[in-house]
Length: 461
Image 1: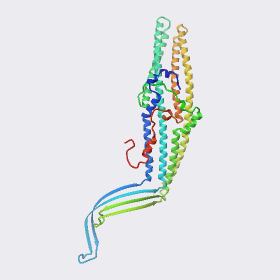
Image 2 (image 1 turned 30 degrees about the vertical axis):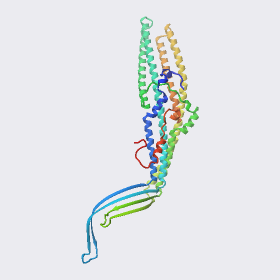
Image 3 (image 1 turned 45 degrees about the horizontal axis):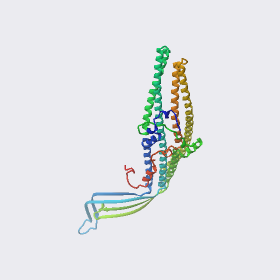
Image 4 (image 1 turned 180 degrees about the horizontal axis):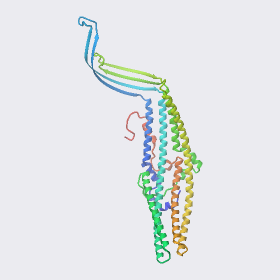
């Protein structure tokens, strides 16, 4: 934890300032990347309801109206009334047909069950992807916060440096007027002041950029920022412990593992195309009138049909599909190994950055203390003529550089602690104990999983 330092000294009083937890809460609520991933996870939830539709019957109602002209000529026994042995009839016919058909799949090679389990694996993968996005957004929010805090402090340092250089230039000119220094000393002071102003303008540019990034990531305009603190207490105390946690908790590994499950079920779905299919169809049909004769008034035809379809050969498509699914499964397993290796590499890298940042804090503190003493000594020596104006200017620049390095080190210390937490898969509102209601993707899943009817989403759209 950074208990003291230039960031603390240059920050405003915490009672009226924005804080890192507050910024994380705003990012958790407002970040568009995170909200988009939540919507994507909700869309994947519907794939389970789609797959479950294979267990349910399909009901279709049809209606038709037919009008035609019918002329018939029939052979009849010859009689005195009909000596030719023929009878003719003609007229307009109107037929109305209404039908209700229900079809139920009884067996389709276990494809419906495997599709459902595949969809569930995809839902779990989408949740892990959402968790990974949450980590990325929270880490970006911390980075944006600390970058803005750093650049604010550096801007204040550069402004203060310009003020000191302006005072040094005035003193140098006064001494030049009384003959204590030469024109070269004045030129050196003017040059250093111009360089200081250039550095201040660069710091202002970095501040504006960091402020815009803060607004984009966190979703609100920044206020006065309080100092940030590290979160080492939430991470394992050793590198092996961090590696073990990353291997079991990181969402990238979870996503890859569930993708393997989904690919396995895809192989089974493809193999189901080789099995027979058994369906049951029931139909109720009511017809008023007829399109074939003049005497029928209405007919009612209920029917039940069981149909068994056995695939024999379909051009080899089903076999190619199975082989393709198996190759995809092999790819997903390799992706899982890659994810594990990537997480381990990220943990080691983040751990090394954290240890380096801790060491840099101590080194820059000592550097600042030493350069302050050196600057005071050089100034005293310059007053008695033992040092030149250039020596004073160099000592002043060394102090500014040391303070900038300390500000940067304090920023790196905080960000590195959050980076380790993200690398192990534990950067979440729950772990950080943020004062916000956590988004639970299970709620939407349970709302839509077994819905049979309706086009409105649970939020009313």
